[in-house]
Image (tube, rainbow, N blue to C red):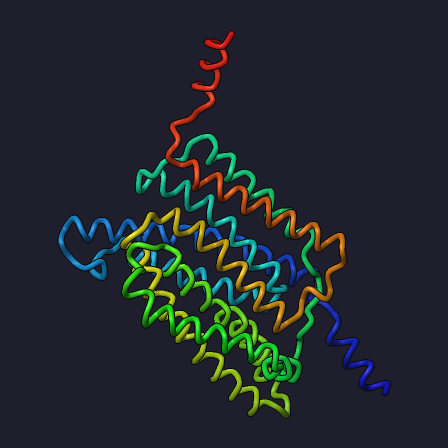
Length: 321
């Protein structure tokens, strides 16, 4: 009984403050890097189309691809240090950064409402950080294996797989180039595999590094999760570039963030149950933070075609007087 209680106590213990600070720092930097990837890849695709060549030959597209790889590695490190429900919403910081970058590199519009949206996105991210869970609900390989075989999570993955097959083989060929939600849904649903796999690899790697008796099982689990992660990333990469060929990079980035974050948080809530460590006040705080971020993103994208500035508002007031 005493040993079991000790193990349970260790499992409930959260990461150290230094690890949380480092994880937050890496997550913020990764979100900014990820925010630049769609813009750079879109710029490379546009340059390649002008030359009549494949975007695979464009150096700017490759710069965006390398930035995406660096951002994903940063996310991997962040997921091993802090809860998923904190790392994923911080991706919001990449949306305003990408919009600002797109206004310079792609000449996409960013008016005063868009700038206000950038400010709201950043403020909402701060609220998310303040109210996020500070402890992990899954800290060992044994706990991870138990969660992965949970019937609820297995059922959720089956639904996701069926939906992906329907989207990829039937809906995407017919409606993908004209409906942005098709490609976004494919990439976001794959996040249900990518993020939990990343988190699981970090936990399995801890047993491998410490040479625990269960190292062989940890190696097998790690290889399976690596295979799942690799396949998910390859498919996401393909459909992200398909979307960038057809749609605005900042519009894609903004909608993708909201849908991807929602589905990843749902998958993480089912698998890791990190929300069980969050009280009512913090739950409301995180909901408000996510709402603020979403409103900011809507301001950035929905009103981007409006030619509106503070100067014009002042002139309108003078005419009214």
